[in-house]
Image (cartoon, rainbow, N blue to C red; front, top):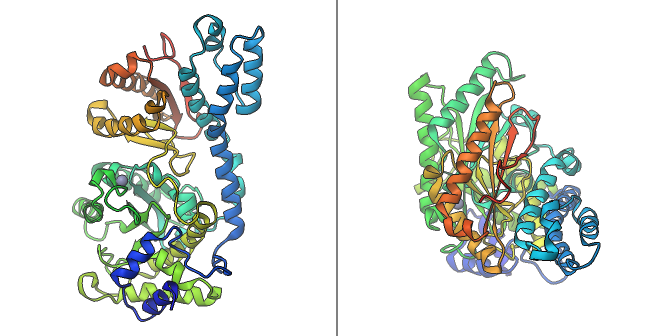
Length: 508
Ligand SMILES: [Zn+2]
């Protein structure tokens, strides 16, 4: 019997795969898809059309970054030509879609072209292009996604508040891994190690409750708030490529995410009374394959570290089944988890709405598993960091793609110093080693409804920017650190508006 059949048989019999089978799978290049040479990995429940549209989107966004180095190489080769500036700008417009800063081109014939500065500038501009074009770029897949605000309502949730780890590999979480359409009911706030801030979450919960009670959320009367924590692990290199915040200790990552979720429930219950607590859900993500472990809550909403359904195992077990049979298998796997004995034991089956959400999420994730099979041979070639820039301050959520940027969540540099140091360490390998600078986007939100808010956000950017320069003086003095400040309106007016320095652009 081949591995897939063996697994399917085990799953059907409700057994966990034996250790040696699990090890076999972990060592495979294409772990989700174990089939014979003449078979294809095409699962009946996968939305091929959606996968195609997401791939076009991914190619478009990555293309804006991939073109930078080649374009700059050509421009560099022209720097001593008589009509250099005009030719360079033509090339930039044609290949990158924007112009380069005139000042960096004008003096090239004397001082040589500052390619490091240009490269950093282009990274920021390409990122801004991707934010500005987000509506148009994303329209084709947005319209095809079914897990939207209406669907969450039908599961009994008026708000889905998600805190993944800030690791860049989780940035494609919503559209790719979860297949959630961006909508007003979904919020994402990433934290290192998924260690979200309980006080700030109680504040978010209170805001949404106020909205709901004042009739601001259509159909929200009977619905609840759902908090989701997403930890991550690496099946092919668990000790090196797991969650850096938890030193790649998976158990640690799980227990801490669960700890925070329970603290949030306690905080709301202790403050607003019994029964007020939000529903909670914990999900693990394999950053090598984008597969999920969904921890199935019991009847009273209690989440257990040992009670989960693994979508990679489901994909393998149901490949080749009809749509109906595969759906029945997914339901059976959730039921099996609900009836788990031992460490995973829970008190009763999970709430119907929560169950509906879990089933939909497991099914949606099969499409992503197949996406990774089709475009990345089942497991990402770069299983670690490969980000384009560091985003410090508050994250912008308009572009959601794996490894787009490393995110250092910070209000002040003192507080976020550890996150920032990790970012600089990552970019020492990614950029400095190749002679490139570290591009840091310093970004904060403001509310256009609050007088003076934008100015305060700009002041915050300036403070954080100079604190970053002060923390890494050698990089800054050596032209190896470029900071671009930007602010966005919470109400959608201004998106990533670049703020220029009062003195010059280079942070000196
Ligand atoms: Zn992490």
